[in-house]
Length: 399
Image (cartoon, rainbow, N blue to C red; front, side, top):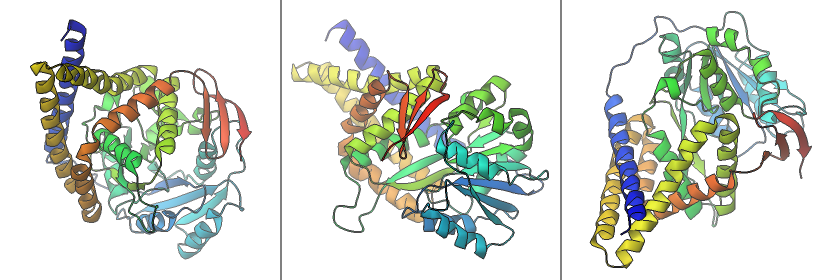
């Protein structure tokens, strides 16, 4: 094995060991007692919605079951013609005084999701202690608001942000379940969800983020999001520039089923990496290193093993052992952060899809490489042209 190949293999194994130790550290951190706020003040939840997908009724049921005592929700859709409008209107009627619904209109200078968020933000009151943003394509457990608001109200961070725990969708009819690409994506997401976080370098995830009142007043979301494509990455960049800590409560991991084909996974991954490149280029480079090393190092080890080098075979064996250990650690984390049914699904997916291990690495590397050029984003029926800061320059409707 040459020097370059040996260096790639060693770097890959160091990365695999770091990911394993990171999962172990997360499991240990979950056992630490956390402070609790003295009061449970009123908060506003913003939910931008597009389309009445199959998860919307379950999302609304999960939202209604939140155990935080004082919350209101403001939904926003693009127009009354959106199929979600009727569903949300029924929820609003069933929860008078707690829910409202806004019509945002079509976006012409920002992402449609951001347009909806700003329309919902109009429901903010002077006495609201925080704003929480939630995506409607997930299954919020009853303690999600509590997990997000706790660090904001106890001073651990000006902002608190969770992360999704993607699960392979269960088949309700032939051909509707998650294929290999979705299952590989779930393995990638589980790896991100189980990493420990550092508040000074954390990145917001708009699907579940709480913003404290002081941060709201300092950041001025209407100004900040005026030409934004990505609500969470713009928020992250502004918070870092203002010296505001972004805390990641480890229990705020939100389950959501995924059923995409390989093309859908590649489009999703390329969009996420491209947005990261335009908003946080250093984070994009680090993410790219993590995406490329398993492919380069694993490929070098496999080539060496095929040529009869014992070191290559030993590296592959060591990586397989670390992957098995990570799967067990992540299963234990799932037991602590997910509801019982979803935790069982996560454990089964981690164990069943162990043979898929090369696929996540190849998909992540392909998505990263595809994101390296261009400043266009196609998302939810629109094509956005961005500048090199991620601001929207033009919006074009697509069928």
